[in-house]
Length: 411
Ligand code: CTP
Image 1 (cartoon, rainbow, N blue to C red):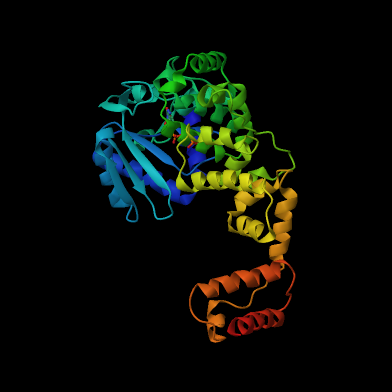
Image 2 (cartoon, rainbow, N blue to C red):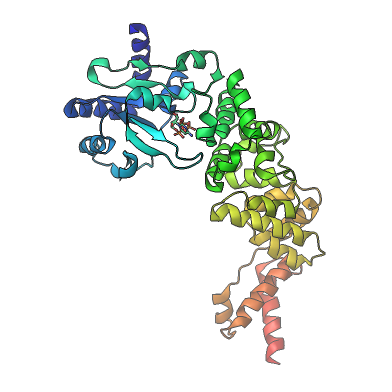
């Protein structure tokens, strides 16, 4: 309607200038190329919710690649990548933001969980193949219809009624990642799952649709959840829906019940991840790792966490403890320190390491006349120990103790 169009033009006018400029460039390119172009998906949803995001998705009735190539003339600092087999293209800007251009298309899912195949089709079909009504709206960007909302499936109504609703009841079978997306959007916006959608989700979980999902795609979706502000709510919903049990088996014991006062929103992704699995025993964690495909940093941190937790159960000398605690990533130490069994030990190690104020280094030792070789490292370790144990407290004492050692060696 005309009123709606004016509302959207007002929303667009309130966007940051960089984004408005891009929309105008898209409009002008569409005129040149003589094709229809739309803004679609999450950006439209979030614009109507007054929480505009960065990532722009466009669909073109025509070739996405050709359109993006023409658009590049107006984006001197962008970098174009084309994915010919999917009929899509991406332009990446120096600040890391990007825009995607797709052709209106129909994706056939040859088997559930597989990558989509592409064929030309019209906008209505393109929007119909999407996950939820709130993600199925488009805004026309052609000059004559600039700002008109295309809403075939009741997206605006569901935004107003705060509902997550699928477009067709095989949506979760077409693409099982949508099961996790449903929970993510519902908890992000505090929307309810529509009754039929909720029932279809539970049926899909029970009927084993998740087994069609690859470990890689499941991991991607899970990590998207861990990046959300309300990841705790999402985690709890994943558990109560039975989805985690279906994926990880019965023994999993994720924990998303942290105290309110804990500052979990500011934790890094790795810390959030470790906290959520910190209640599991080491065997369960190792089993869990077979059901996810983590990047190196997360995998390393998880393994360090498990190994360190096992090591802390054994009696340790102060220097062993120091080596463990001070070599580990901060996030790993923080999570272990929250475990009642280890908090005292870790506190002790951190306190002891605060006493250290080493002024000597390898070069200084060479200047003192100590021969190059492994001896240097050994002396530095011993100096560190002396600080840890409080045997030295000043730079003078540090030099003194080293001289004493050197003299004993010379004798
Ligand atoms: N989409 C879909 N099914 C999926 C993934 C995506 O139908 N499994 C469609 C939706 O229309 C979605 C759009 O592709 O809006 C873009 O997907 P994506 O960028 O993953 O999500 P956004 O909706 O933009 O959400 P977010 O805010 O999390 O980025």
